[in-house]
Image 1 (cartoon, one colour):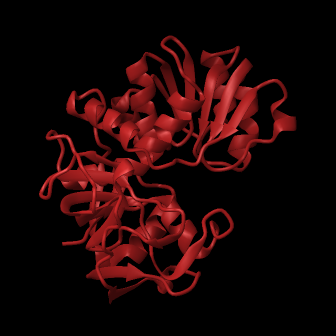
Image 2 (cartoon, rainbow, N blue to C red; image 1 turned 180 degrees about the vertical axis):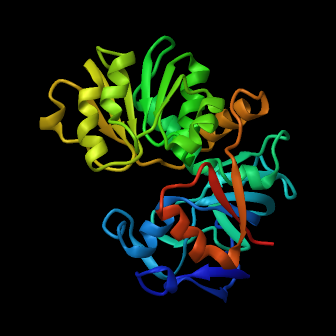
Length: 314
């Protein structure tokens, strides 16, 4: 099969196109033929070795964790799916090696969900990692409720855009940071107010509307933004980051946490139901060829994309 691989950690030049054997499904896996995958920041972080301590790896390594395609083979004993069905999955495994920048991937059946009929496979490829990250951070960890106020950093990005929609669907009032050119986009997703982080201090802008702070902050940026976000919270509020681990001392009495999304077919099926009912929608997407993976990763690293980049494999 056609695949993009790296043989060592390093820059975008490490990515190269090769032919690799199709990974056969084990007893608990499904083999998926992939017309599309999508780009996430985790892809270039894997390539550069930033995740080597938290995620064991083996070379040659195929990057990518978003799978959307057609079931081609069921592992022995796998039930509940049929060959030919459209499915998607967050295809992260304990050892990073067989990713989704390839024509085929084998994924544990517990990570798989059916793609709703309301979206195509390119759109489906944008959903698994970002959707699960937003769900596990905001709903499972922060336990957001109707009527609460939420600040979501980086609302135009993949995770931020999904988080805006999930929070809004629950009935929360959503503030988000985004550059000015993306304000219309994030407001269409459901943000009550967009703050231009490049032109104003987000804390000052937020406190004009919410002098006492917000109930929940979702950090998708890290660094100084995370450190300043403690002051955006109400007393007893919740801060959850999907980038860096919050400092317990700085947080004081605030509830804090770090969420790294885990594969979960049940949660993904719940997200698929929201998509099918039109409660949430896929992000804006830009399509590029698999062979352009290096360019796509570098654009993702620049953090200025509204929505997601998908790679067309076939």
